[in-house]
Length: 162
Image (cartoon, rainbow, N blue to C red; front, side):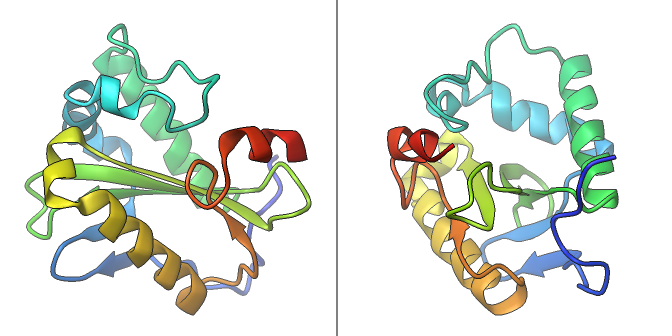
């Protein structure tokens, strides 16, 4: 079984919401909206998990996305990592995702990766989400030094730490 990212006594936030975003656990029930967000943003999202990542590709199927979401949901339930879907406040559209994972190095106590769908770039949602998540983690989560590869540290530097 995977090592827990947070202690048992930590109350994992189920929801974060404000006037622009609603973050909640990513589940298999989100597959259609998640798949739409990913597939309409392929070129925009490539590299979000690092320069070696080939996710997403145009070969991604709805069924493969469903499997990925199920895996994220299970890891959330066993507290080994936490994937949040980023929804519009009315839940009509998936606008991105936030992943809080164990850090593969000892410099950072967690790794945070996030993305927004390409259509939200014009609305500056990416920068807004990044600042919002950083504040949320400082105020609500137990991490002392979360790493944001591709954001506060270059991917090459991040990979050199592992």
